[in-house]
Image 1 (cartoon, one colour):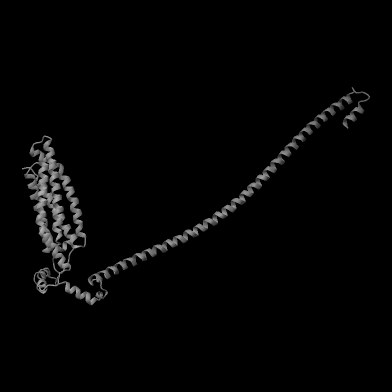
Image 2: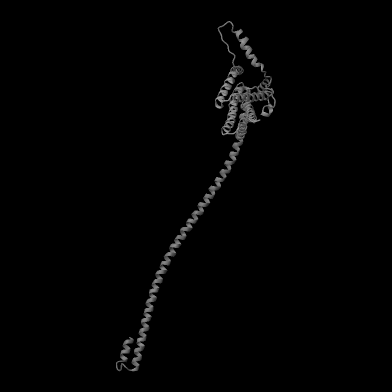
Length: 362
């Protein structure tokens, strides 16, 4: 419209000042309009961009809101699970406390049961396994009868076998034997006694021959055999004094109405075999050390000193170990095990001490 108005005004004189001013004004207005239009177009573009950003932000907000709701649901679920686990833990703790109490009660009941079992075992053992023998009156009677036990019981077995039974069966047609625990012990003791001397002689002969062949010396095996016999004899003496004579019987844990405890017939036999072997081992080890130093060029006296110095600690340590092992037998309740403990520990002590003392050079 402005263009048509200016054109009509400038038809008569296009170069007139009013016309020129109108044209310049029109050009300026058109320029401002174009700038305004460009600015409006930019604002529209920016507005559309802002709208798109707002829509994206709205979508993000919706997504975050949905995630927040999901997280809240997860948090609520986790809290519920935690509460459930806590309840389970409390229940398990109560069960554990209950089980602990039951275990303590069971242990107490077990101790009472074992005590009752031991009492019943003692009563039945005294009664020979007969339930009727558990009567306290019979047990008292049995204890009273056990007190006047007499070694003459073994003599009675011999008398019955030598005179009573043969005279009663003289007419023939019957053969009678005397049995029982006492008779069996008598037979075992007799059998061992009849073979004990032969056993000792065989062991001595074999030991002397072996040491003689090993060291090519007659004095060493004879001295070792005599030393070992003295140690074994001393151990037998301690065994007899402790158990048969009752000297220090309470020290090994025995309190009997007789004051003595019979020595099992096979204890001396087994002690001799075990102790003679141990003592000869000590002797062979010591002499081997002395021979080794002498073979290395040392004079006899110095070789003896060196051999004793190098083997004394080993022999002493071995003796301490064996004495500790055999001494632990004394803690056992069985009288035969105690006899082995006393005899073996004393013999090992004497053998190790004598071997080291006899090896000292003059």
